[in-house]
Length: 155
Image (cartoon, rainbow, N blue to C red):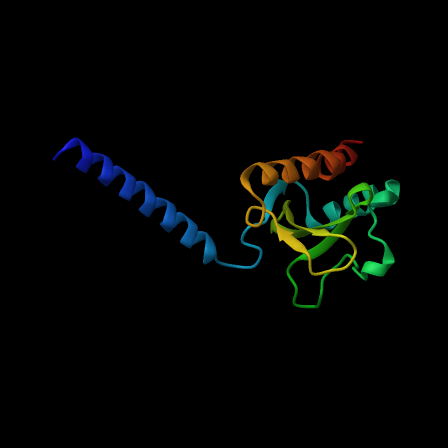
């Protein structure tokens, strides 16, 4: 095979891999398939209580009432306990959820960011943001919310 043929074969293979990976992401299974998940070693109710403590100690993270978003489950059959945070200086709402994963372990997931208090402008983490912006958004969540909630658990 000629050198040009080998190069063409490599380009085609890389393109096919890229297409397969992107297509697989489009049909990701389950609810919240793109959420960034963090495993916390504590029962679900304890983590929810810690997050409520964090929000009461840091009221600037409470979503203003005009957004009409309340923390909690959306119904009796909802597996996810939804929690919303507000980045006042950026005028953004952050959607997270908590779900028990094992007896003494809970998943705390960062799902999406909404620009402004008018709902419907959600951008899903790990899907709607570009590579570098996605890293920045996740790092901000980890620094502002996740690490501070973990610090409360150590107290």
